Image (cartoon, rainbow, N blue to C red; front, side):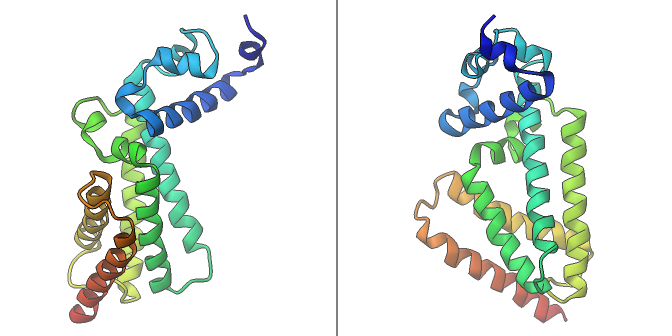
Length: 203
């Protein structure tokens, strides 16, 4: 056994496996990820990853779950700062799109068919996605109270449609329909104006 393999403790290896898996899918795509390639990249035996993840699907679920946790952190970090509700919303929209584009392979796992249709989402991934969405809906309700988002429907419906706008714009760039990143900022600002216009109309 190599010195590198001896260095790892259980928790350290789990973290290292996830970090390396994230890099592999970012550079080569999720389809290129395998448990064998991951083991070789980290420098452990071919069987070591299986002590932490049952199979590739379980590994992908863990990566997606990690993505949801990162989205939560982005939102909480903005809420904690001294921004107005409108400023916070604008900054979150930009941060959401930036995360989606810079971590597009993870974003695909979080919201794409690889896990949710072609694979099998783990119970912990399902719980993480529901928790993240609930946090979003709770915040939408606060934004409605501050007249940042429309109040002409429930927080659930407004939250669903507002997120659909964010997700749709993210997908247009991730899928290559829009390639010019210079357009993104202006498109985000216009989308925010559209949502704010709906809010002022419904007031």
